Image (cartoon, rainbow, N blue to C red; front, side, top):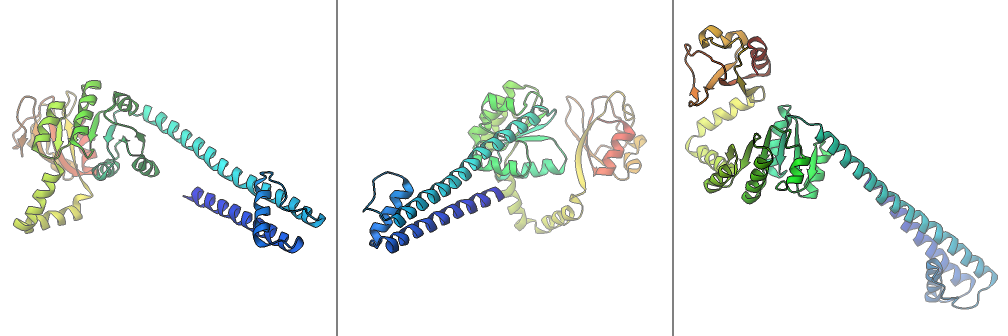
Length: 338
């Protein structure tokens, strides 16, 4: 923005100087040669433009001196304006090219990151959440204005169509651990999901859908998770009327504690201290200062909500845990979880 303001100021100065030279020439011819206003203005313009139409009338020595002044002043002002514009355009192109290449180099170095396809309202909300959680990510956006907006916030961003193989490969899909298809159209999200799943069969994909029909299509395309923002928003609006006390309680809880609490998933490995240990024996809540196990998912079984104290961990169990950053860090370190 500062460069644009400086550029505008320099162009304004150029136009002002050109206007001053035109006025000096016009009124100079009127005084020196005693010509009419239009003849004087015409002589000044053809002199400034150096078109070579010839003199309107024979000039006196003083008039020729004025003509030399108009020519030299006009050329100087024109050179200044042209140099300013050229410097701005060429310099801007060089800076933009350098910035894009630098960004592409950073994206190539990403490992285990998340790709966000689409930087609309939902995409921006997704990015804010990823920033808060400290995740590495890059954005793919087709709209140039949204791309520049994302870059201006310091986000690694690629301008292009996320449904294309080349663009996804530039975003490092082979090294990414997840892709979030957050574009506005269901067709784009479906195509992006298919393309991403084809290139990297192991990648986790979460996609936005508009209704239950699109959810079925996205899952068939290869999405692991499908979110329906309109459905979620509609349920919340309904609950504001049907269950206002519950909504108020949840809002108060989130405002008071939500910024500190996080959900995390941990896997019990063979080397973990939880392997073959029961929940009661592990005493996780007391030893971590409050971390709570909400659910445990064992391979080929349904998730177990609020597991009892006699539940015994085994290799490969996935735990969904709620706690603040210190509690979760204590859980990872004390029990050697991944």
